[in-house]
Length: 367
Image (tube, rainbow, N blue to C red; front, side):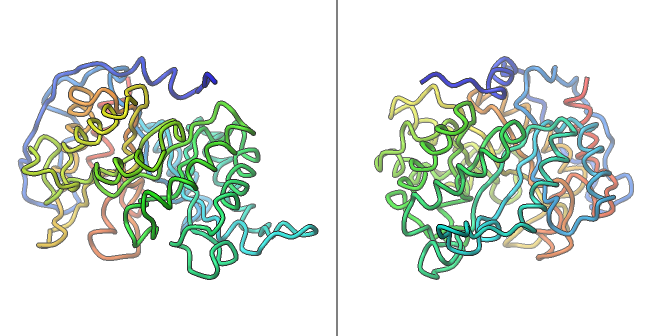
């Protein structure tokens, strides 16, 4: 059945080859004040030639109403066009449904309603990642275990898709299914859930896009396993999280075929082509660089480097990987929790002042 997508029709026309401008950081100082200029040394290409720019938005975690309003306003003026929002199934439906009670938590639903309503009202496209299995659905094995019956997840996500019809344009089926800290799964156990969700969502809202759970890294072997398990035809978009190893820029060549190198997205695409799936686009549903002084295991970058890398990310992707329709930056603002690496990926500081990377994105995208 032909799909009508309000996202794809506009996005495919945006993809064209552009020149790649690679800048180097001129300052080793990762301190906050004025660490990078807001502009680029090279002329930015038209926004019509770049992947759609999005961010990870945690509006339901630790934000006041005033902070949500301010951040959404700033994101909309800095080139961001779509938001990726995580929603926990375990929070929405903590209890097993019965004939008289569907097991849903009205307060949790109300919070999600508000976040999605606010994003939609601001004109953002919204992609929801539906994850975290409730205990009743998997025998108490915890939120990172798949449901015992794929149809339980399918019914839940289809109900959500219907509830947010017209406000949410795509649904991502779990997050990083190849990363056991996020989901304890194999391709053989994940694909039945993916396929059940795909069929259920398209039955209720045919023009929505179903996105595979973005793999941790460019895990081409996992993607191969998905196809071997029968995933073809069970998703509209294939997603990866191509974080670059060792905090290198996107243009740094991959020295091997490990998943931790940005340019190994080409290996993922080779798998797709081997399975005659050239018509399916790719989204980067998480990617970014954290601004901190750097440690051996989790190196950071300076504020200026982050700005340089976000520009290079969009330009390099447009030039070399035209099948990548969207790039979602992780994340909207710095976080107050986690280690120093996790805290500092944001385009905005915790006080919602823009980092140089936010200004660079604005100059690149906004015309």
